[in-house]
Image 1 (cartoon, helix red, strand yellow):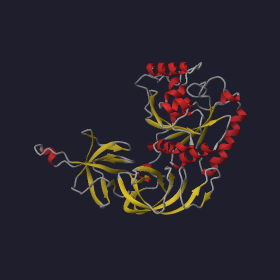
Image 2 (cartoon, helix red, strand yellow):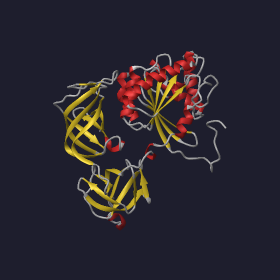
Image 3 (cartoon, one colour):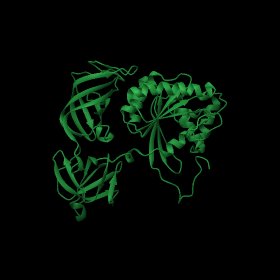
Length: 429
């Protein structure tokens, strides 16, 4: 049975949703890899395939340029590069996938951070001819910093080095030396050719010296991120639902708190604490699209009804009693500066954490990371793509966990109020 052959519906396992991204340096074959994965798994619509076949023919290519499946912007197709993050969706019958194709150019690092912030797995591509490059290190560092639990190092373009096992072994050794400095321990290495299709969905015949799984086999078996360990319940309130229908008695007293479960599980009858007030109550009902559910879990958008009348508004947080996050007006974080305008220590910024906003000022920069040597250097300002350990003082308290414990409540963004642009992304330590 092939990797994509469907099983009878009563025996098909459901391995849940997996979000993953491809990243690495320029022209390492990220877009071609995704195109090959979709093509070989037979998940490309016929009209889409015909469109890229016509475009490839116009360019005088002998074969279909599979990178066109993700490079949708005209500027991307003209230059043969990826500029913005492209998302694609597909299913194999046993699992659903959301793929993010991240750009490799240094100037578009901010786009890679956006894609990585929700990913469960990162595929870091390396050109077999070039080995580990600066942008390979930068994307690896960011993937590790953003807490992506599964990293696959894919040595691509093996067809251009005659499928040499020695080349693969050398690149693997170089990357492991770098990963040891970062503290990355869980890694998978995979030789492949996205252009020829070796080790993507099918094994091919030219990498017989590699006895590990194919890329699709890895993707099919990786556990979902929220199943890795028990998580504390976190529910930032987005909206207070009060239906305006005085004639309907059932709706007259309806007060539901709407939002997305960032982590953990909640059951009807559980005792919860509302922050920042600290008031305790019990869960009366849990609703999704008007239907009551006995429990809700991470990533569900739900409405929570409570037994007691408590003043709750957007920006507040509902947690299980006894599992309180840290409430603080000062945070220490690893910060990725994304703006072309450097960080100004004298300015006030807006810090957005879950659904809560607070004025913020830089309290200090502990160090900046040199992405080439991994050295911690002193710094007074941060420029675009700099990564640093910083501290912020806040006008309003936030309810935060360490990013390593909860990605949802351990992350924040920094906004320039004058332009309304997002200038940085941070992970609380």
